[in-house]
Image 1: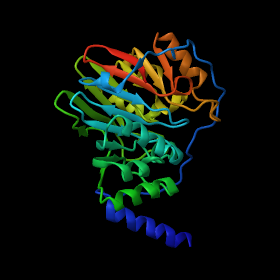
Image 2: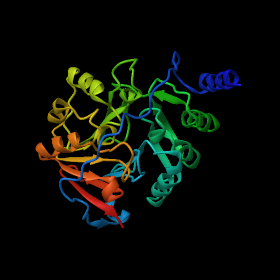
Image 3: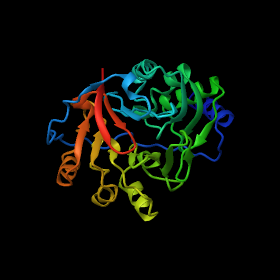
Image 4: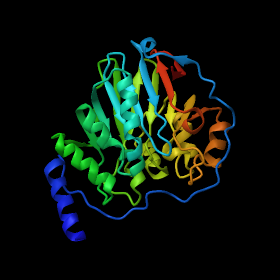
Length: 308
């Protein structure tokens, strides 16, 4: 039965993926839990803002999906991108949030890597929106979450493009968007396959790192990429397996956003990560404390809000 199921899965993949040569191998989805650490400061008293006040700006919503990631981006020219969609249970929440912004089409959809807390909600998204381009890294797993993404994409006849360093994403003429990772074709840990995306608008920049860990961070540093960003989506929910000193010092963010679930079993964010961010004077926002966090750029400065 297992052999027949796997044969069917790989048949689906051959029909839908625009790349070939993927390999499947077992991975552990999560690192061991460590004791969590309270926030250094309370940054959750965010002013409210309505969707109507956000026109002609770059709006980045870090959607509260519990222990997972989902980031919705809307540009001044109304181009849209969604990076991840949390677990399967959070798919409807992500869809509803996007629809409330008056959006019916997603120009760029990215599944950073095939872990359930990142791609689990993607089938719901694919079913509810017109998608122009869909990216995932060139790696497979045997999870039902991954299989369901493939099935949803196949049903919509949506090809999957390879997410890798060097890929340029089109989000309008005023936005520069590029993938900086993954830089290798094989990693022992699935987290390091994470698509890392940098978006620049005017004098401001955002860096979204998925669950990229220190190995991927080291590769980006070795490639001498321009990693400087005003806002860093902290890797792997604030785990100590990410956010090396050298990486943080190169990015030099003013703000860091950590997406994690309240009282999660993994202890995210880890004490070590929070202490590094504090020592570097970085203002931290956490979805487990603040709920959905909205960062708004006018091309010169970045401000943080909550949606009314």
